[in-house]
Length: 151
Image (cartoon, rainbow, N blue to C red; front, side, top):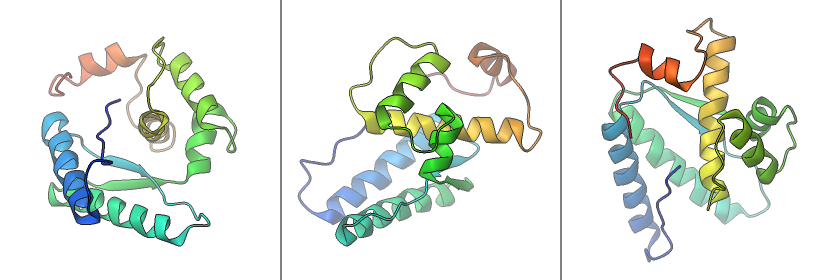
């Protein structure tokens, strides 16, 4: 659940460049088959939405450049998938993920937990809706997918 920080970068272009570079680094390190993202939500601040849209566009472009399909899930779909409640708080999502994945560490950044929630939601959707493989746990997943790199 790593994060990369953008606060020290001065311009929007510098931030977008970092997002591109880091997204490509993650893709090249872990070789994902797909990328799942949280769909934009409509807030009150237009400028924030514009910046988020640009950032997501750069991440999408990185995935598409590496020929990785991108799937979007609404915030409520992600929360529903993890907690059973589409209006759950970030803290509730983090707590449920800790139980689901049997981790004890409290995340430093809830944004990292949000990203993990998107991944787990995507896993649930692929394995319950499309008839994908079913695994008894993460160890079974790793054993049945030997070409995956461990972090």
